[in-house]
Image (cartoon, rainbow, N blue to C red; front, side, top):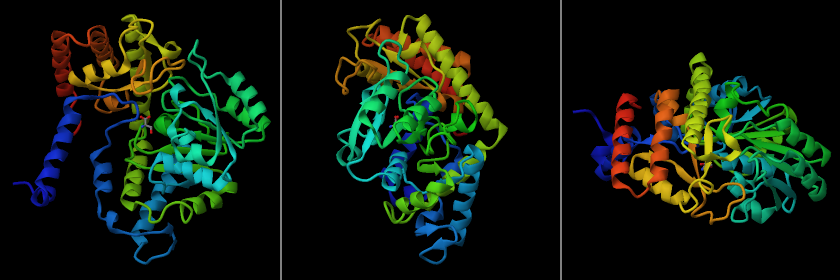
Length: 415
Ligand code: DSN
């Protein structure tokens, strides 16, 4: 029998872990921020480096025995520099939110002003929502996307920055389907004498593969998470020019964190190596092609997409025009019952509560990892549209679940 240390110690957790692999295999992961990492990345994250304290940075640690931690972290840094072209990279933040926190600690004083996209328009909690520490420690105002077009309103952002006089403008989003024009945001930041933080958490992989224009070299800081389109396992990172290197490193430790999660940094190193291959470039290109196929078919089926389509890895469906009595939660729950896992999402000009919003967000990174083609994604669009049309019809849900089963059998995740 195969050696299974978790099962020998803790059958309840072992059962849950096995069930989670089965859940991922048997359902379509369409939450736009999720992906499936390789077994190599998972092994690295589950390695003995979880035992090691390594406060400090390669070659400058507070504790002994860090020689292998140094090797791993330096590889992660060097590969990140190659992927994104940044002068300085810190791979220690435990998450994308903590990467943002490091930037605030390095560059702002409590009470400084931040201008960021409103959460309900596709922003992020850590960009200054009132329920987050950022909203508590800084004076925050929000810009919005145009509810008519769904595109960012760069002119309004410029004017807002002139009036508000922020210390920092944040770009980079969680639910924005279009290419971000970094230079236009940088122009607004420069005119207001503000710093510019571009949070590319969702599109790290697309930027690395040149599927989306890069903010590196334009924005003062670029942050990201490492487990979304880049597939390097859970974590965060900060990129900046040399002039901010020391301040960022000090903000991460001792400013904010203690020991880095070296096992996660090993996952980052391995995932970044995978991302430096032509296969990854091909993958990133297919993520976008698949999202476009999904978008076109959803529109053919009468669903309205925010901004009328996508340039990225995600689509945002506004249910109000086509299905005014159906909420995002209704659809999320019905789809989950049929094996398609995505999330209800607010849309620009939201008229419902954020807990039961008017939209659904769907992404193609995870499906593409398991080999879905554009044709498969058109089929998935039909399944989503079938459920949106009849979320309570058991026959429809059963038929959708059957097709989901055929698709997941055709595209296994872990052999
Ligand atoms: N929770 C992530 C998302 O789904 O966009 C962002 O942190």
